Length: 589
Image (cartoon, rainbow, N blue to C red; front, side, top):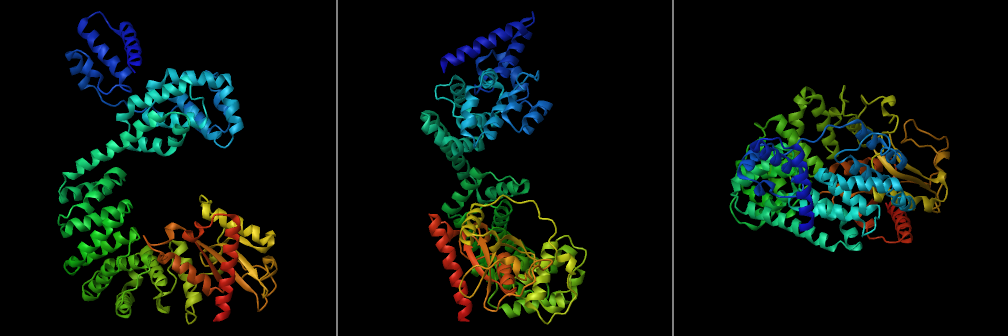
């Protein structure tokens, strides 16, 4: 490291000799500016080694240089679809500057992430070696975020452990370690730890983990000095800016759990709001907040109850005593509670699929309040309230008149399905048949591992493509993961031959045999459940209920059962067993 520092100082002095004018004071100032420009990415405090006058000038200069504006070559790098396009940038007169060469390497590693043969050829390419030399010469100008991605990319491209360029990047990371942000350190630890162990970079890994631990300790030491009111201000500030600083949130959570200091009503409400807004889950904190809030519920205003219920609903955290207290609070303030507060409490209950013990009294109050004011609600809120009543199985025929002019069309489909499937006495109006057509499929979200494995396993069981449908969009606003037909002997039937009334428009012309069963597969991901439980959220309870009412037998595939299956044989046997159980339960009724 000393040799590297001497080398940098020599470069600094050469550059200063070219730039310095005749006057001594100005010369010192130029030297200070060059020192700051050259050493800022490798030394913690370069001004401490300069003359006093230079340090004074240096302190007045801006601490952080602005990130350079995006140039045309940056767009070429981002849009490149093959290695050749990127390597041609070297000889195309583009003049890669600052961290552009590093960005080319990062893009190359992404393009070749699943092509080990092409990676080996790339490493031997003379143009790639030239690119690495260019990166090495510009390493001090590479920004922090790009630097950590560059190191990960060099590991991914499987450069030799003795590569001069790889060692140079590793050394640069060491130099900047104390000034890298926590997210950069965490990114390196998560993405590159295995590479570091395999390729002999154990010292760098140890230093990286030490710095991560040090940041955590520093954060704990800082938060330890905070009073409850200061914790409240910090969390509310983070929530207002939507800044989800995980180290700080973890440190605050640790002290909230460990310290027995009393929390006032205002602090408790703000903490619940901040955790809900930031979506930060910490079970022990939620338990304390719920326990401490429970005695305060009688003294809360209706607005505070609605706000608190909404915060816990966002966190998917259902504390039965607390929510029972919320319901009792609403009943005790029946005459004075504002419609907006009642709607927020209702939406929170629906999200968590919570029904209070005094269910009849509570929902009678809801219907009484809505009876005269439902039509006057904001259109979007009107749809949300009706949807919440559908989730909780409390919608009445008089309330199911389809709202018009809404943008929340998905919820309108769910309300329409509730009217058709669960309220046979309701005669209309309903959404027209043309509105039930799902239309062109929406852009696919990223396929989850459970979704992919479920489809692959089921396709193996079916044997033929016409025996099943996948990602089935129904006219009820729900998408089935898969659909199959079973005859009386448990054999798969071809779907296309039979009527499918759940599609829009309905397809097929042959009626289903009386003994045949229509099965729907519904997967339940981790996010489908309330926090720390195996209870589905209200949204998914409504989906399951509608699918059953539409004439399907439901095959539930929850993530926690699927994770226990190791082999493909176990997964196939699991689905077969699930189908047999669904049919047996139906026959036993």
